[in-house]
Image (cartoon, rainbow, N blue to C red; front, side, top):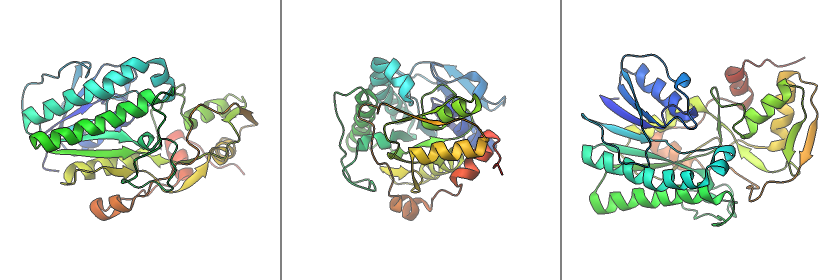
Length: 308
C-alpha cells in the first residue's frame, strides 16, 4: 500500500481490530489508539509491528513519529453502548473527530473518517445515495449517535476546505462478523445468542424493517481501498442486498438448528424502516463491491452449518 505507519483510533473494537489485522498482514506498522470502553485488548493480535496506546480521543492526541494515514473508527457504535453513554458518544463524535483531524493535519497524513448510514436517519429516499441529506430526529434517543456522526462529517469537510487536510469520509452500513460482542444489541449477535440459548428471537415491531448486512472482511477491503484513493467522499460502504429483520431471524434459526421461536416485541424508537445503500460510487471510484453472501458470512463468522 506504500504506507509505513498507520494510526487506527478505536482499533480494539469490532471493525477496528479487523482493520489492524489487515494492515499488519500487509507489513504496515500500526498504532492502535483505544480507551477500551467498548473494545477489548483480546481482539488484538500479538505482533511486533503493533503498538497500543491507551488513550481517549476526546482529549488531544499527541503521538510521536511519522504517520502516513489515520483511520478514525473510534465511537460507540451499537445501540446498547451509545444509549448507555449518550454524552460520551457525542464527545467522541465531536471532540474525538476534531482531535483525529488535528493529528492528521499536523502529520501531513491522509485521514479516513468512519461515518455511518445513520446519517440518513429513517430515510425518505430509497436506496440511499451519498447526495441524500437524510431524515434524522435531532432530539430522539438515537440522535446522540446520528448527530455525532453528522457533526463529524461537517468537521472533516471544514478541515479539508480551510486547511487542505487530506480527508475522506466513508458511510458504513450494517456490518457483522467475528468479535461482535454477544450483548452489543445489534441484530445478528442478539439473534445468535438467543438461538444458541434456545430463547425466543425478539423481533422489534412487525419485523418488516430492512437492513443491508455487509461482512466485515468486505468492509475492511473497502476502507483500505478508500485509504489508497484520492477521493474525499462521502462514499457508502455496505451490501445492497436488502433483507427484513424477520428474514434474518428465520435464517439464523435455520443455520443454528435452534428450536427457538420468534417473538414480536415493541418497535424501537426512531428505528429506520428501510436501509439499503446505493454503492454506485464505491463501484466506480474504488472498484469495490461486497463479495460475501449473508449465509456464507454467517457460516464463516460464527461456525454455523446449514441444517437438513
